[in-house]
Every structure is written in C-alpha cells, then in structure tokens.
Length: 142
Image 1 (cartoon, helix red, strand yellow):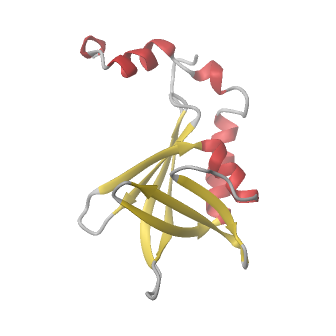
Image 2: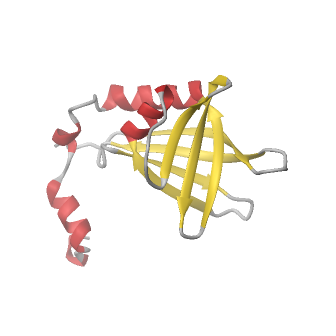
C-alpha cells in the first residue's frame, strides 16, 4: 500500500455509433487511481451537463486494444477495418451503446497507468481497510 494516491486523467472523444445515423462525438474523461488499481473510470459527458460513469477493468481495455475482450457488460475490440480505432460496447438494463475511439489515445492513457502502477503490482497498492469499509458502507470511516 502506498500513502499518496496517484491519479491519472485524460480527456478523450468517443463517437457514439447509431444505426442509420451519423456518429455523435461524446466527450469522455478517463480516470485511473492507484487507490483502485485494477479499474479505470470513464465519465461520458452528456448534452445536459451530467456524466454517465462506467468503471471497468484496466486489463480489459488493454486486452481490447489487441483482440476482442470482455464477455459481460463491457466489450472492447480493435475495429476490423481500421486498426487505428477501438470499439467499446456497453450494455446495461437501461440500454446499449457502441462507441469508437482512437486506439492511440486509449493506449497512451493506459501506458501512463502502467507506469504509475505496473502490471502484477496492483495488489500492493490496495488499502484493504478502506476497501472493506467501502464494502460495508461504514459511515464512521469519514
């Protein structure tokens, strides 16, 4: 466990792909924190000023840059006809969305996260007291 958390943020533009409609650019803030070393958060900025946040495994994004990855609510894969782009598919009970984004932008962000917390060292960054408190929703923690 480390005392000072490392937070890496990067803006990105994803394109929302809809059938029979032009792609719609969506501003996305990618965030990584060493306090949650296995996860990446993507905050999709909607037109009304609110954000829709998705949290998923950092390794899923990494693997999806190379080959199709994910079997659940988040799937990532290189675009078959454009190796410079990546497709991100999100599913939830309230809807389904398909985005594409620049593979280089995503790769650069991930590279910075792996410099901060190298692969296979995530475990040493976990603060188990905080994680357990979060799981138990312990108000005394604050």
